[in-house]
Image (cartoon, rainbow, N blue to C red; front, side):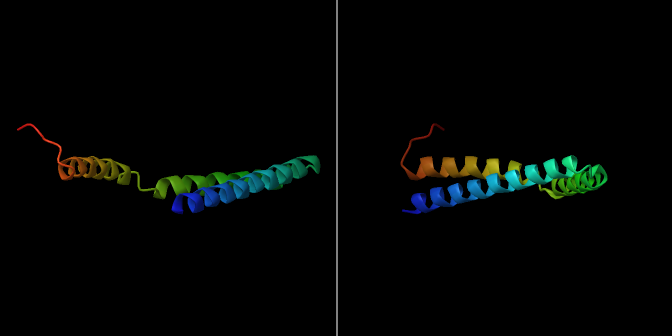
Amino acid sequence: MSQRIKSNKTRKSRGFTYLWILALAVSVFLLIYFEQTSLLYILATLGVTVLLIVVATADLGQSDRGSESSAQMSEARSSASGAKTRK
């Protein structure tokens, strides 16, 4: 049952993402059409700045620890399931 809920949440999230993309595309088109390129330039600069801040604050070292812990978990599962290991 939890898988069904998870897939429904993913679909809703995907639809919301497509709605954002459509709204941003229409707004950019309207800014270009009405020759508001100065405003478009400012918004693009702010968008790139926010993106750079998000990337700068992302904890990229966490992914290394996650792969190590997943390897340890797989070893623990194999030992718990009774798999024989060579020594």
